[in-house]
Every structure is written in C-alpha cells, then in structure tokens.
Image 1 (spheres, rainbow, N blue to C red):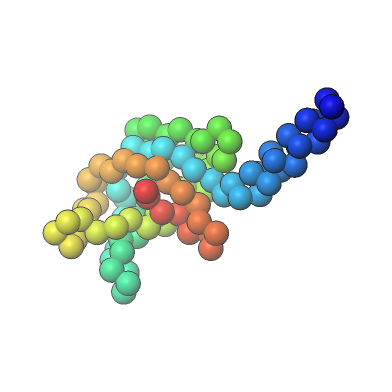
Image 2: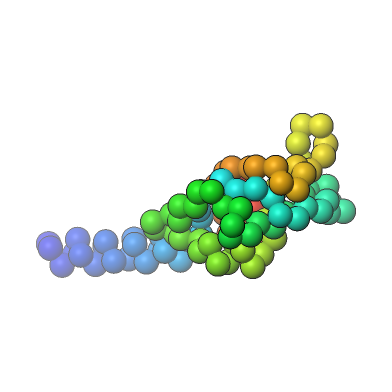
Amino acid sequence: MKNIIAVAFIILSSQYSMACLGEAEIISSINTVSKTASGTCLVTVVDAAVKFYNENGTCPLSLADVLHSSIEMRVTPQGTCLAVGQQFSGVLVLTKDGSIIVE
C-alpha cells in the first residue's frame, strides 16, 4: 500500500512539474517601453529598478531571465502603455511560447 501511494505521488508530482513554466511576483519601475502592432506593451526592467521580486517556490521564474527579456503587458484602460519610470506590480508568467506576461 505504501508503495502504491509513493508511486502515485511521484507520477502526480512529475506531471505537475511538466506543466510548470515559471512564475514570480514583481514590483519594479519600467526601464523601456514600446507598443506592439497587436496592441500590447513590451517593457523591460533593470536590476536597480526592481523593488520586490519573489519567485514561485514550485515554478520559479528567475530574475536573470526577466532582466534579459521583454515583459508583455496589457494597455491601460485609456489604451496607452505605462511610461518609462512608472512602477508596476503583478505576477509574471512564462508562457509556453517563451514570452513573459504580467497577470
């Protein structure tokens, strides 16, 4: 019985980790910003501008990966992107196609 439980746990945990791509909480100021043709905003951050960063314990997204990538954000309710220097916060999620989005 213990063996069955152990095997079931291993199978379930391995399936979960395969679906896990990466997440982290962030509070940071924006370093660069651009609006894409599809209407979303791409921002970058630099290490000095990051005020808070907390990797998900199960599905971590490293700060190094974030610093070397663009982050995709939705536009504001006014239809614009946040400006350089403005602060944003949210949960960063690494998607299946390798992009990082703010949820």
